[in-house]
Structure formats: C-alpha cells, structure tokens
Image (cartoon, rainbow, N blue to C red):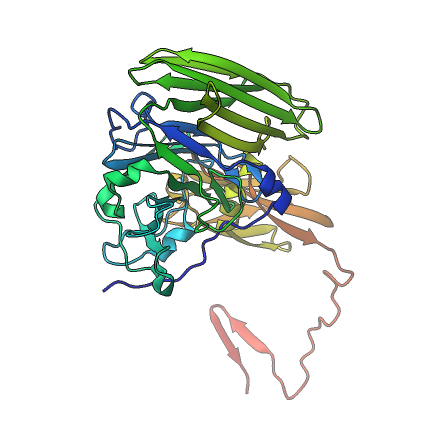
Length: 481
C-alpha cells in the first residue's frame, strides 16, 4: 500500500501576459551522447560535454535569473535521460533536508526541503498510445515525491501511486556547490526508440529554501504541468551540442558559448546573441560558424553594463546557417551584479532565531543570570563555545563578559555587573564555530531607577498585638504563643 499525499506545487505567474508572450520558450536540439556520464554525484565538465549546458535558473520571486546561482545539464544516450544540477549552497554549506526516503510511500515532506524538481514528458505531441508525463521532486537524502499525468485519460489524469524506482540518483556538496546527477531509464517512463523522433518536454528546477524560491529553466510562470510552456529537448544526430559556459565576467557581462560538432560531417551554423541593458537599445552579435567534424568553436560576446540598477534582457539562438533549423534558443532577464550573500539567504536570520537566550538582571545584587539553548540550531554540532557580554546599547565596551561551556544543547552563565545607571543595555551572545551565526544574538534590558527604591517607608521594629516577635537564639528560631 502507498500513502497518497496531496500537495499544491505550482509555478506561479508573476510576469504580465505580454511579457510572457514576448519571451521565447527554451528549445534545444542535440545528438545522443556517445559516452554517458558517470552518475556518482560529482559533476565533471568533461563527462557532461555531450549534454546541453545552461547557466542560471529563472527565479519565480524575481521574474529573472536568480541571484542564487545554478548550472544545469541535460542529455541522453538513447537508453537513459541524464540530468545534472550544480547549485549554490547557503552559508555554512547545509541544505534544508528533513524528509527521509520511503520505498513504499510518497514523501510529500520532500516538497518543503531544498530539492530538485523535474517534469519529464517523453510523449510530447503523441496523439495515441502512451501520453503520460512525469513529475519528480527529490531532496538531498533521495526522498521522492512523484506522480504521473496522462494527457490521454481526462477521467483519471493523475496517478499518485506511481513510483520512480530503477533510476540512479547521486549527489554531493563541495566548494560551496550542491552537485546532483540523475539518470532515468527510458523504461521507467514508458519511452521507446520511437520517442526519439519527436521533441520531449523537460522542466528542470531547483527549489531553494532559506528563503523559499522556485527556480527553473524557463521564464514562464505557468503551472508545472502546463504542457505548452515546457522547454523542449530534441535528439537529432546531425545537431551540434550548445553549452553556455558563462554570463558574467570580471565586472562586465561575458556571454560565452561552446558549440561542439561531434558528428562525422562539417556543420555550418549561425550564432546570434542579443542583449539589452535596462532602457538602452539592444546590442547584437551574429557570428557564422563552420565547425568541422569532431570540432568545436567558442562564441564570446561582451555587451555593456550600466550598473546594478538595471536588468539585462538576453536572447541566445543557434541555428543552421540558413536559419531553417533551430538548435538552441533561450531568452531571459538577469542582472550582472548579484545580491550579497546575506540578502540571497535568510539562513543567518533563521539560525539566530533558533538560539534561545533567556536572562534576568538583578540590579540590587549586581548580577545577570542567563540560560542558552541551541537545540533548534541547524549548525549546533559545530558550536565550539560562546561569549556572553553585557554593555550599554550601541557601545562596544562591555561592562561584563564571560565564557559559556555547553553541556549538550544548553549552557548557563552568571555575570557580575557594576551598579547600573538608568539606561538601555544589551545582552549579547556570540557563538563560536565554523558555519554558526556570525552575528550575536542580542537581548535588551532597560534599567529604570524608581523614586521608591531603597526608601524605608513601611519599615518598623514595632510588633502589633496579637502578633508576637520571632526570637532567634543561635540556629533556633521560635515564636512566643
């Protein structure tokens, strides 16, 4: 038995209908890969040289390529579909990964983790027989949310019981990047050799968390199961392999293509790149290419950039020399200058919220008592210690400071304070360790001196009958009844 979970996972339309209509749908044609890549979770550029390569994914939140970088590949050897995604890791290098794999059940919790999202339509354009397409979400641990849709069966369009089983998924984290490699056998998705004769629909996406953003190949904001807007990939024996190697250079745009001809015949191609920065007229670069068999050619275009305020609108198109066949097209908006890391990610703010700092100030005793709990902190295993300090608000000069030693997930501390004047003070907790929050967790204490403090009103040695005084004799306390 499988547990069926329902969840709404959708690409939301954020751009205007006119903007969508003016943008080209991504399309790629390439030959089958002579040598498939090794699916070991470490992306090797040489192993993926026979696949299309793209830089940047369209951010649903920004309606342009996201500030969190992602590079992705796709190709096939005629027996399996191969995909890879190399995406930026958050500060500290930890992904949000809570769902665990379940061989028998759909893991809907995967949709709330950092994940790779795919929609594969091997039967695009078919009018009979198998017309299914497949939706797959997978997290770092390999937990899967999957199902198929059937264009040919409107009465039972969605099958949530389907399970992707005989596939290969491998991933790793290194040097600030999450590497994901995937191989899906044609047999798992009902694809046959006949399906190589027509385009496939293929969505490749990266679901970022902390903060949440859904990024994908295409610019369109349609739902994930919207067939007309799916990027197209075709497998044609005499097509080139177009790889986008970069968009950014040192302080300026550097749009670089690598176009390879793995075939046995020479290829005559035209590469066209148009780039419009902000409200300026477009700059265009057209280059005729004669690529010999087993050869390759690079195309480089460096348009102007006027600063971080404006966006680039770029179109990349590679066609046959007579422009009757299109081998690659992608149109997108992007910015040369990405947002700083602390703006790209919310992990630092979330981690600070995960630290519980409780404290009390006793001004008559010139004492501060504090309790710290880091049980909810994702990077708690890397905490090596902490410093607790007490200072006037806005001042770098601590009035008191002490070190905390954690016993498990918690620590306690006592600070001896000087006599406090009226004013606002801060209690600051700074954790130490690689990948822990770099900014202190800060609490506030307001000292107000009231007029009645330290007066002797109501203080008297008189005992009013029938009450009797307490008598103390050494360690003995007694009353006279």
